[in-house]
Image 1 (cartoon, rainbow, N blue to C red):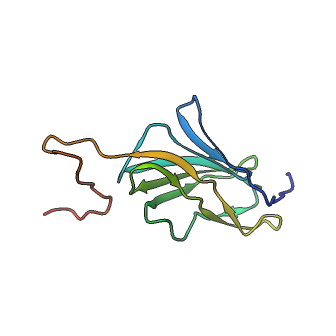
Image 2: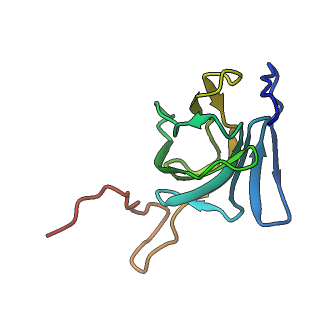
Length: 151
């Protein structure tokens, strides 16, 4: 097992790749989103891997996000070969070129690991919903995930 070293400088690379993915990575994280534009108010599936020792325990991110974003769900996979896969479901509430913020992930069970790791920010384009048959103009309803059911 490789020793875990923490660096003070994290270089973040964001790129659009030929594999139809938008990616961001730093020393500890690889974060991916689909290349197509995300729709405002709809579920955005993000996936990636945390590069950390197999003995470390990682918790899903907690805490406040900017009001333009919400994390709906987080799933962590089993660690294998120094990587722990994860999936995040997020939602954007602002249009245009947006940046999914860096998240703080709590780490425990590894004396060489810092107490928290930060995932890299990820740039993506958030588009308005397509016009409905009765929509006129640019103003359209956004149906959120927590809307109560109508009787």
